[in-house]
Structure formats: structure tokens, C-alpha cells
Length: 217
Image (tube, rainbow, N blue to C red):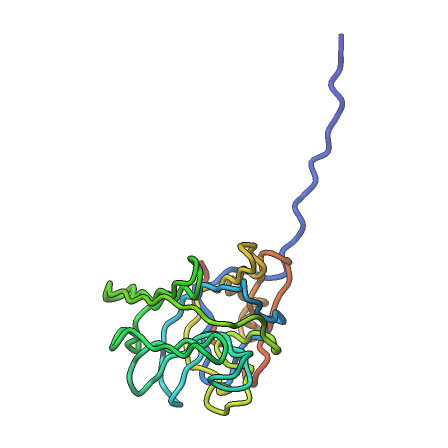
């Protein structure tokens, strides 16, 4: 008779957070530094809701010295025209989607995720706008910020007032950041952070104050 060897089941490693949450909310002083510098092959997808418009521009994700500098990369909402503005090197500065970025709507922005196409979907109204982009952009010089701009231009350097549901960053088709909002701790001591499923690490608020925390998933 052959006796099967006893196998010990190992518990999965503990996660560094207490719960996934629906969103993190910035009041205009909170943002996340991804630590990732965009390349010519970088793209991202982000889903957010504009809560208020404290400044003219509300970045979804941005890095670069100025609006039209060679290292500019990312997108924001122009709060005056309610349009999405995109930047990718000094030769691209595009705007599209009149009235599509309404305050309170859930917005899904796919920034160059399919070839050279930028697509913005207002998931609340069902409206979609897109634009094809080409430029001589080769690489950034600053790490990409989420809900703010790592920028020399004051408007884009101001953090947004948004709810962030998720953000995914790709480089050359490889997923390099996969951010999920999470709650660390509980009760009055709870802190909102982004958990990167790729590296298994937490990214905290790089600004001041604290993120608002949505309900647990």
C-alpha cells in the first residue's frame, strides 16, 4: 500500500491593507507620485469623478515642465470649457469633448491605450469622445503624478478635487502600475492609499491632509 505524503498548505501572504474601497477622494491637496517616468511607449487608463473645480485645470495624471514642453505627458480637465486637454511633447496640445467632463460624472479616460488614440467616456451620460494623436515625444523627465501634475506650470501642479476609482499605467504594452484604492487601518485611524497590484506595494498621499475614503468593496 502506498501512503500519500502529507502536504502542508501555506497561507497566502498577508495584504498590506485592511480593505479595498470604491474610491479615494482628493479635496485639492492630495495626490500620488507614481515614481514612474513616461516613455514614448507609455499609456494609461484612469477613472475618476470631478468633485469640484478649485482651479482652472484639474489634472487626471500629468508630468512635464510646462504645457507644451518636450517632456509634457498627461491629461487634465479645463474647468472653464469642460473639455479634456492632452499633452504629449511640445508638438501636441489637443482638446476634445465639449461638455463631456461634467462635475459629478464618472469619467473613464484611456490615454493612448490603443495605438495613438485618446478616448474619454462619460459613464454617467454615455457620451464618448476620442482623438488620434501623433508627436515627437520620446521621454519625460519627471515622474507621473496622479490627481496632480509634476509640473513647473502652477496651474497643472495644483492637485485636483476628484474621486479616483482606479488607474492603470502601461509601458510598451506591459502593465507597470495597477492602482486600487484601499483602506489601511480602521475607524478614526484609517488612511486611504493606492495599492499597486503589480509590485504589491502601497503608494500614499504625497500632498497634505488625507484622502477621503469611499465605502469598502
